[in-house]
Structures are given as C-alpha cells and as structure tokens.
Length: 291
Image 1 (cartoon, rainbow, N blue to C red):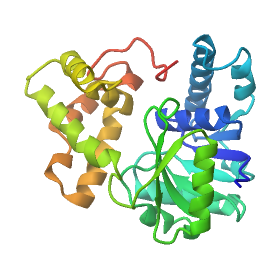
Image 2 (image 1 turned 45 degrees about the vertical axis):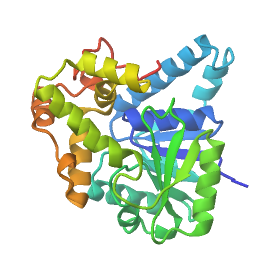
Image 3 (image 1 turned 120 degrees about the vertical axis):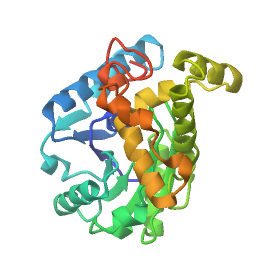
C-alpha cells in the first residue's frame, strides 16, 4: 500500500503545472516550487482555470475545483518541500541543474522521500548519481499535457531499489495515471519516436511542402491523433525542443535527432509557441491546454 500524502513538484512550466494539477486532483497535498514568483502565480491561475473548465464540462462536481485548489500550494522556498513523501522534478533538460536541485532536496527532505525526474532524454541513472539517494530515485515521464494524458513512462535507474520502484508504481496508479515500465534508455518509448519525427515535420515546413495548419489537419484526419505535430510542438515550446534534440542527439548520434535550423531561427524570433503567443500557429492567450 502506498503511504504518499504530500507531493512536491519542482518547476512550474507547462509540464510541472500539469503534474501538480494531476497530484492535487488525485487528493494529494501538492506543493509546487519554483524560483520565479511570477511563474508560480501564473501556474496557480492556469490550474484554477483548467479545473473550473473541468467543472463546466462535467468532469468534476460543482465546487470540487475549489477543494482541489485548496490542496495546491505554490512556493519559492525549497524548505516548504521538507515534509513531502514524493518529489517530482520537472525542470528543463540540463543535468547540472537537475543535480543542483536534487542536492538541495536531499538536504531538505526526510530519508523516506522518494525522488523522481520527469526527464524524457537524460539517463535516470546519471541524474540519480547526483541525488544522494540513488536507491530512492525513479524516472516518471508524464506525457504533455499531463493533466489530460494518462501515460507515464516509469524507468528505474541501475541503483533504484525494487521497493522504491514498487512504491512509485503504486503512487502513479494512485494519481489516476497509467504507468508503463521502460529501460533507462534515451527517449524511453515516446520521445525515441517523437523527437526525430517532429524534426522531420519541422524540416517539411522549412522546405515549404505544406502549411502548418494543413500538416496538422492531415495527421489528425488520417492518423486519428487528437493533436497535430505542430500543435504539440507549440505546446512543448521551441526552446524545449532544442534541449530535447541536443540531449537525444548527444547520446544517440542519430542524424534525425539533430536540431533543425528552423527551430533556432524561431527561438531567435521569439516564436516559442503557446508560451509566447506564436510558434507555428498564433495564440491569443497563454492558457494551458484544456483551460
């Protein structure tokens, strides 16, 4: 039986906010930590808007959104995560940054606390090596948008104990998610396919083969995907796509994982996707998906 009661989420970007919504919605006391108070305020507003919309759509009972938000605490003080039973890191793909965060968390949190990373491309074993508790560390890769997608790729590192992995698996199910076990390999299942495929789509646009809206329409109509690849890329963000490419290509040397030139040009132009109001498509708000 899983005894997790309080969940910490590190990083309040699109993914961190989504994971925090999932945790709070499942009934856990949820603390979301970030250094930027403005980003935390935005995450709080986005979570409230998403849950309000869930009530309107009949996914939650009237007033249930307020009860969930009462479980949702934002903080710029990492010490507020001291009593968490489970902490999920969801910052950008940089091993040094992740190690620095987990070093702090290891000093703050109790020995029983299990650490997890939402990384999609960096080795779980490598991250675990800088945490001070490699036996109590696991990979938990949520799918974007986490508040709507059920899949979580669960990956043990070389030193992850079986007890830790079992508890993490039970916790994932308690969140209402659907875990699948993967080896600690670059990209796990989804991003092993998605990063090169998205790069192919980006190059298709750069070559002028079709307009972004038409590519998305073709994929959704023919393949039955709920989102087109360029809609998903706008949600991920060009800055994140660059990091994903660098991490996956750096490990695999797969030519199709190399970052397309168009991504860097779009970053230079400030066209990051939903977060900036324009990517491959234009957006009139920065609400998270489903809000």
